[in-house]
Structures are given as C-alpha cells and as structure tokens.
Length: 398
Image (tube, rainbow, N blue to C red; front, top):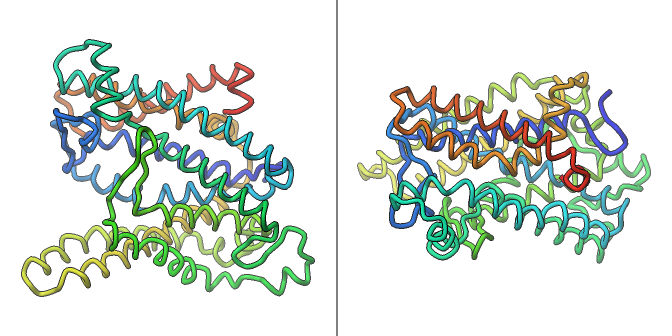
C-alpha cells in the first residue's frame, strides 16, 4: 500500500530516514578532527562534548550530511502544506502548527537542552551546582537551542506560507493550482530530463550569493531562536519547492515509478557520491592554490560553491528517487519509526551528549564510540517516544 488519504509511504520513510541521519550526525560530532571545546562559553564549541579520540571519517560523514539533509527536510516539510491548508483553513492550520511545532520547540526543546548540556557545564566548570548551571545556561550560553532550531524555523515558514496563501490562493512558482484541469496541467508538464539542471540553478541562486555575502557558516539569533543566516534563503526556497511539488501529482508524475528520474536511481546515487567526493577533494586543493598565489580567493570560492551546490542538489534528488524506487511495501518496524520520527528528533540529543560524556575516558576508537552513541541514542529516544505517544496529548500533536 503506497499511501493513505493524507500520507505517502515513501515520503514518510524518507523523512524517518533523515531523522535517523540527524541522530547519526550529532553522534559523530564529538569525534571529528576539527572539534573544539571552549571552557569559557561552551556555546562557542563545535559540540557540547569533544573527545580526545578523533577520526577523519567522522569529518567526511558529518560534512556529507551537512551539505544536503536539512535542505531536503525543509523540502519534504512543504510537500503537504497546501493540502493541509485547504483541508483545515488558514486559521486552523496556523493554530495546529503552533501546537505541533512552536509549543514543543519552546517547552520540550528547552527542557531537552537543559538536560543535554549539563555534561558540557561539568567539563567547563568542574562542579555540578544545578542553580549555577541553569543561570549559566540562560545568561552565559544564551539559551542553547540545539537540534530544535529546525522546528521553530519550520513554524515560521509555515506561517509565512499560510499568510501568502490567504492573500493569493493561486500562489505557486509555476501558477499551478490543485483544481487545474488535466489538459491545463499537461500544458505545465515538467520534463524530467531538465529537472536536475533547473534544480541546480535554483539551489545556486538560493545559496551562493548569500554564502559570499554573509559567509557560509554564519549563525545568528536571539535567545533560543538561532538559525544559520547564510542558509535562510536556501531553506525557505526548498520549503517553497516542496509546497509547489505538493500542488502537483508528484507521486505519479515527476516521481512516478515510470519517471526517467526514478528509473535511474542507481545513477543518481552514484553521482551524489561522486560529487561529494569531488567536493571533499577540491577543498584542500583550492586552498593550496590560493595560498600558493596560483588562484584568487573569489574564483576559488566560486568553484567550491558550484561543486557544493551540485552535491546538495544531486544528493537531495538521489535520496528522493531511491526511496521512491525501493519503497514498495510497508514494513512494521519502519512504520513505527515513521510514526515516532518527530519525537525521536525532539528527544535524542540528551542521549547523544550523555553517552558521549560517559565514554570520554574509555580507551576505544572514535568509530566504536560513534556507533555506541548512535545505537544508544536512537534506541533510547525511540523507546521513550513509544511510551510518550501512549499519552493522548502527545499522540495528537507529536
């Protein structure tokens, strides 16, 4: 069974897979070779826990995720927004998103991060005074947001789009409307062979100008409302791309089983690996050329950003078509993972940080520590999510 009235199986499985990837991503951050810890204010650290055991493989894995997976999560989050607004109305839609996104972000997110960052405080200050820790958390560290940053940004995107929709019901990048006649829809048909190029150009325009202007790694915010300022346009653009796809029959059209994109899923997977490999190799090579005076800084960055954009685009495409091609029947374990993915996302961070903290002195390789952290964090947050969703309030909104 591919879908229900309001869900699409392969999208649900892809979304839950990305959640697992988020858990793995955070599990790797203590073991990257570039990890650093700032005892004065641990918020400036690359991660709340930094282990003496490192492995460059963690750098490669972490950066691969960072290139594409949040963009793809925003795209997927936009897919069913228009249908949800049409079903509930704008006011009810915003109310639903307030309780499903903003309230969990502010309440559960704050509690989760208070639990998660305590080991960082212990390492930085050498004492476990709870009152001093809470004061430090809100005043010195300025309310660390952790993984839930995605949730408040997604809430803002949902509200912005709902308001746009309220004032212009026909909003869509291509003027598509869910009630468009078959003949009119055919006139707006997308040529799948042009999709990768158009997608690349779209990503380039959303990311590269802002990366040059603001710097690719710049974050900003106030209180818990942190966000990566250089990627706001990219993430909102991908969210809008998702809403646009949602106004079309993407499940049987662009991403139908017979689509040339889906039929060649192996090629797109291979190309995504090849482009990321090229990105990884190009960074030190371009840096060396700049240092040797053989290449100016601007063209070096431009080359890198072109490869980065291509890697992001093709990785997103590759994972979408692969899950579309391989998700044929429902599986009980994956169904459970899909149902509890949102709570796993909300709950996993303390398990990650505390597991990494408890293994700091263990004389075992970084990769083994990463695997243990990942398995403990995923299984523990999944188990807790199973219990919490037995409570009606959690089941209704989370």
